[in-house]
Image (cartoon, rainbow, N blue to C red):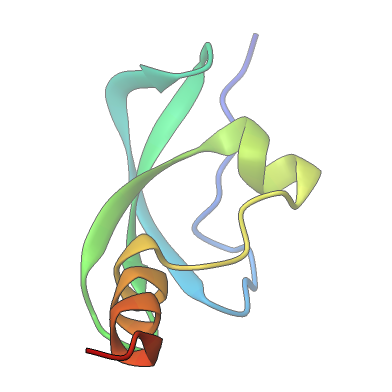
Length: 70
């Protein structure tokens, strides 16, 4: 099976940099960078194709912490 090139995908949150040798749920894990915070993470190609990965893990975590009352 041929790997997809995600570098040309226009994603609202992430920029896809390069594929890695790692796998996430049997699909190629891509190194991605968040457009908002600039942090990098790994995202499975299958998640992107299904459009089931729409947020940055880092930004989401920070928003949840900020919304909690101490």
